[in-house]
Every structure is written in C-alpha cells, then in structure tokens.
Image 1 (cartoon, chains in turn cyan, brown):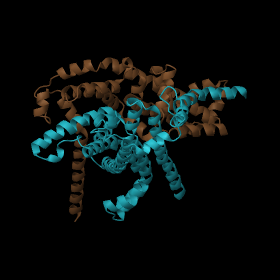
Image 2: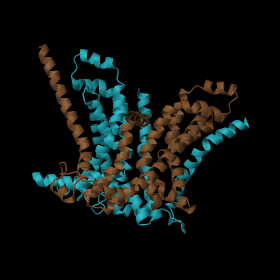
Image 3: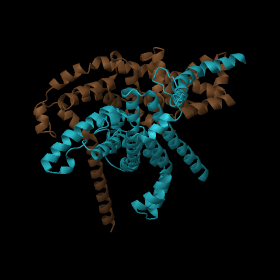
Image 4: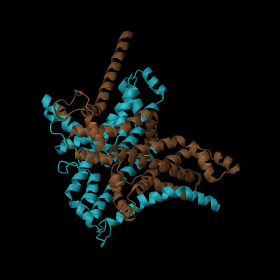
Length: 286
Length: 277
C-alpha cells in the first residue's frame, strides 16, 4: 500500500513541482507584490492599494485597455466569420480544396513575431507603392496613424489565425450526418436555408469553442503587436500585454507593472469562466 | 428544364471555384511578396515591388544568413524545443496515467488545480517568475526548459488524462499478474498505447515553443538566443533595409515550411484535436 502511494507521487511530482514553481507560487507572490513597493529584488513597505489607485489615473494603461478591448471585439467577429467561410469553402466539392486547406492553415505555424515583420513590409512598402501607382490614397501612410495601426493588426491577426478557426469548424462540419443534408435537398431547401436551419444549429458548439478561443488569444496578443507596430505611433497601438512588459522591464517599475498584470489576469479569468459557464449551460439545455 | 438546373449548378460551382482561388491568392500573397523582394536590390524594391526580380540575386541571403548567425540560433531553437517537448511528453503522460488510475479525492483536486492553472495568462506571472529564477541563478536554458514544463504541462496532462479513459485497466492487471512493477507497466504497456495523444501533445508544443519569443527573451542570455530572439534584433538592425530584412525572414521561415510539408496531415489533426478537447 505504502509502495503504491510512493509511485503515485513519483509519477506526478515533476509536473506538479514545475507547475507550482512556475505558475502557482508566482501568481500569489505577484498578487502580494502588487500591494508593496517591491523593486524586483526586495520591498520595504506594504502600500495597500496605492498602485491600483495610480492605475485609474494612468492614461496610457487606460488607452491600452480600450484599444485591446476594441481590437478583441473586432477580431473575434471577423475571425469567426472568415474562419467559418473558409471552412465551408474547403469542405465543398472544390477541386482545389486540399491545397487551399494547406494554404489557409500555413500562417498558423509561423510565429507572430516573424509574420508581423512581413506585414510591416507589406503595409509600409507595398501598400504605398500600389497607392502611388493607382492614386488611391487609402493605401498611403499605413501604420503611421492609430487607425491604420489598428486595422493593420486586425488584418495580420485574421490572416494568421483564420486557418486555425477553419480547422475547428471543419471538424464540426464533417460531423454533420450526410442523411440530414440529403433530406433537406429532397425537401427542396435552398443553400441558404440548408445553412441556416440544418448546418448552423449543428455547428453551434464549434462556434462557442472558437469564440472563446479567439476571445482570449486576441486579448493576450503580444508578439504581433511588438513586431507590426511596436505600439506606435506614440504608444497609441500598445496593447495591455505590451504595456505590462514595458512597465516592468523597460521602465523597471516591477510592482506597478505587476498590479497591471493582476488586472489583466482578472479580465482573462472572467472570459474563461464565462466560457465554462456558457458551455455547461449549453450541455444542460441540450 | 433538366438542363437548366444542371447549368445553374455548374455556374454555382464555377463561382465557388473562383472565390476559392482568389482567397488562396490573398493568403499566399504575403509569402510571395516576401520571397520575390528578398532577391532584389533596394532600388529594385523601390521601383518594382510586385513583380519578379530582374535577376535572382543571392547576396542578400549571404549577408542575412551571416548576420542572423543562423546555424547557431537554429540549433539553439532546436535544442530548447526538442528537450522541452520531450520533458513535457514524458512527465505529463506519467502524471496523467497516475491521476487516471488513482481515483481518489486528492487526484480530483490535483487535476482541478492543473486545469485551473490553464486560465492564468503568462503576463500575470512573468515578473515574479523571472525575479525568482534570477535570484537562484536559473535564468538559463535549464530554467527555461523547466518553465516550459510548468506552462505546457497542464494542457498535456489534461489531454493524457482524457486519453487514459480508452486504456482498459485490464491491461494493468494482466501485467501485474506477470510480475511487472508500475514503471514497467507504464513504459512498456501504457505509454505505447498513448502514442496517438503523444503525437498531438508534441505537435502543439513544438509549434508553441519553436515560435515563442517573450519567455526566452526574458530568460536566455545572448549566447543562447533562439531564432525569434535573433530575428527581433536582426530586424531592428535593418529597419527599412527591406532587401536584407526579407531575406532574413525567408531564412527563418524555411525550417517551419519543411516541417509543415513533411508532416502536414499529422500537424492539422493534432491541432484540431488540441483545440476541440
């Protein structure tokens, strides 16, 4: 009996130890430090809610939060729309469907940092060349204003991640029994009716999954932000994750950065918990 | 009448075919633009950004390859990725097995802690994490691999625990009768049965760790820098010198493309599995 317990602990200790030292202990230490004047090495005073009070007046942080929420909202909608569209496209009787699947998914495997640099070239050099040539002014000066920075980040994110959302929807689309589509055909349903009344209700769980996946991944974005706009111009496109990294490691305000990190955690946790709640509710409803 | 329906359907498929082709072109165009411009001179990029270069000039690649220190950063990335993924696969499968076979309240609580930890974003732990590891002199490759186990172990454990439901306990019992101990049962019987999920876990973690920038940039010294870290400095150095920057980006992408085309089916299945479970 004793021996059995020993092997149990031997098997789980490596993962448990690393999780504790890498995630659990730092979470609690971070929470504590956010109430102190910690400088990364030691602290002298517990200062209560001082950092959090300062957060309320931190215009840059407020801008970052607002920008991140706006970015998340728009990218979640477009990503799911495009991802579903691509999935419908590559599951139709298209001759090129296999190669298209390969192409749409490819950007997913490459890091956001590298992809951001590629798109920096496209927005700055290619867009302006095409704009000069065609006289279309909408293509000039990309990434030099907050608005073009915003849409640049949206385009990059959609291009990179739509293939991933496509894969999720494909799994659900392929789970639809053929007989259902056939009987809808016999009943004379149009393509739109088939989609609205047969396909859509059956892929709705996939919608929940990818909605929340894109919600938290968009909110946490860092690499793409760093490489595409670097937060510029004048930090107007700096998202929350980048603002935290900057506060802690560039301005060396460790405890203050940590208080932002705590707020960040709370927001992400609300997203995730509402997903759990929503999925559970759906299961009950079914 | 018959013919009309047939014509209509044919036209519909033609339209979808064209939409597919256009979308495909939109999706590859960034790679196309990167590639053709990486062979041009700065002047040519300026005068002719959309077309093929006048001649394929490899000078940009020679400079970029050298400046990226590509051989070294490639092997740094490879080492970190392979060891971390190996460690994650080994220890997570062991823990998933132990938790699935030991159905106690404690096991349930431990599993819940792991699942809960998946909700915690990296940015909310990175500051104390790097401070702690710095204090004990572990901001190096060993520390990084240990961190990857901590961050990646939860999802892997969760996937292994789920997969264990398909492995019948009679497997264990038969092996016990044959006199095998727990380690033998696991490594000789259970682990091979879990290999489909091991492939999924490995694929997901390779994609993540190979491309990860922020964590290694906080942990590793310049001598051990991985491809993304090197790329960040390289690009900063060649701001607006697009010909060199694009050659460097192409070099950095090549290993990923080779990986994708050599194991495409497994990769797509693995990613799909990891997302939906």
